[in-house]
Image (cartoon, rainbow, N blue to C red; front, side, top):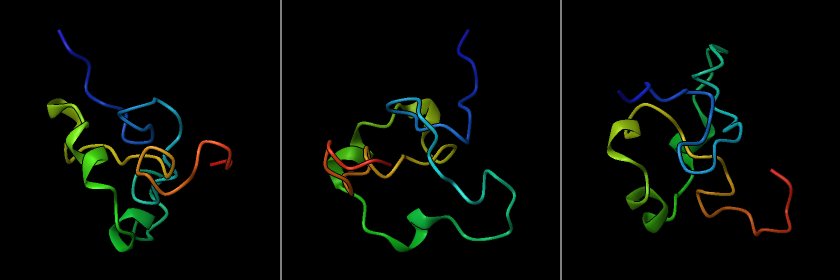
Length: 68
């Protein structure tokens, strides 16, 4: 049985995704106003689509050397 995705974790790497909506901050998430690499979106597992944000690194916004 698959466990529901954690909305505070990136569904690709499992690290914190900095999702404002998952943290219940009342603020919109960074990803709603930022272009995301289409290839990154295609890699999200079906069971996590629409349930957990990518982290900035997996979204293709940071190079591997940049901290998230």
